[in-house]
Image (cartoon, rainbow, N blue to C red; front, side, top):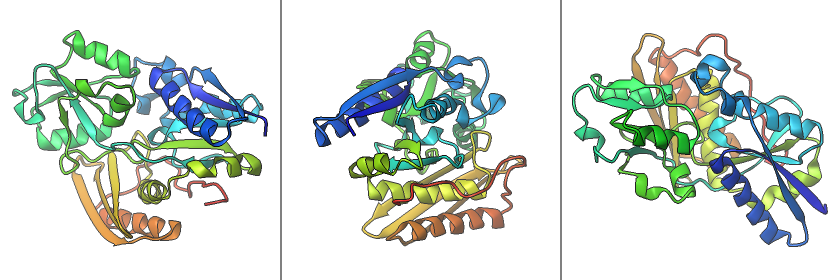
Length: 316
């Protein structure tokens, strides 16, 4: 290949992610011409409603996938947590890059720690996952919707609309905004979203040359971890409409997968299991076992959601 075109959302964070992949590929292939095609997605344009009200995760990927189908781009770079649990048949996730800090972050200039929040304080987040866990910790807090890109969300906080807001630490770190973080949320209090802090590179399944070219960027420990998380989410109908969190940590060949889910009666259910994971099949199996533990407690797949296997690149 002499040229590679990367489709990306237009937001500052999305462009950083695309440029990060571009830079990694440029080091590997100095003679390859690599361009970025910046696109606006419906998820970026519709900011007055929560994602679960307007269609879910696919709102951040659809326009990029159209560019792949039209031959306008060769690959698309996504935040993995924005990628639906299932992909249409023409597409595959060719690469999962090394994960950044997967924790959530508490952002506030006035309240240094979540535990310092006053009774009835207003907290900004549009994540049902964060809301469910925060309400379980502090039922008195008032949760207000917070949409928009990273800069927009920080701007709303700076205008005094909230006592503080919750964001993914990875995005703040990637944009050199770590100084805005008042507190990193311990995963014992706030489990991350499925796939949080990992990047996914999507392409057409039939483009084996592109898949082969991308493979040096694949980070196997991250792939195994997020595969366990995504399998768990898939079993429970996971999407942005489901208050579900999961995080897999790896030490040696041992993986610990922890998860929580708010069921349809408002209960926050927890499950965890550790096991030896040396390949993708074992990671997926662990995800299935933890999903089963949640199901045994009464968790059910939320209605109207697809629950068919998520698609990986053939090389996985």
